[in-house]
Image (cartoon, rainbow, N blue to C red; front, side, top):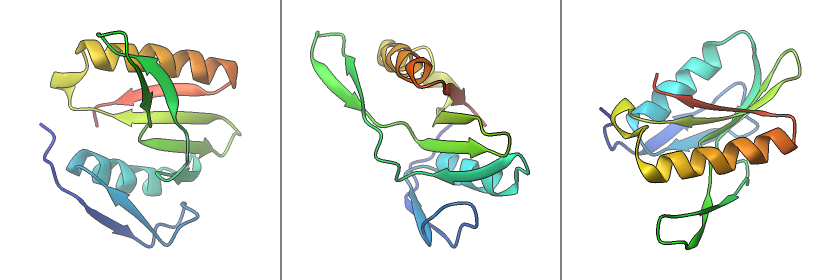
Length: 115
């Protein structure tokens, strides 16, 4: 279960920033995982990507994925960290579909990680 824990991840070696902010313990754990993954070249949370999507009431919204990751083989991916209990919610499904289309148009991958 995601614990609502906010904080700063200091001195990441694979991010262009001297710190990154996390909004949950799952995000913090993903930062640690990205730092240790030898296939990850760069990652960032403050990437500026905002993907339009339509909610259940037909309102246009903006979705900011958790991480932008570049791998050593040149692949790029957006990673969203989710508690497994929330993956099947309607809003998560709608955001996922919008993100998958957005990524496909840019030859990127979209990944939902439950850590």
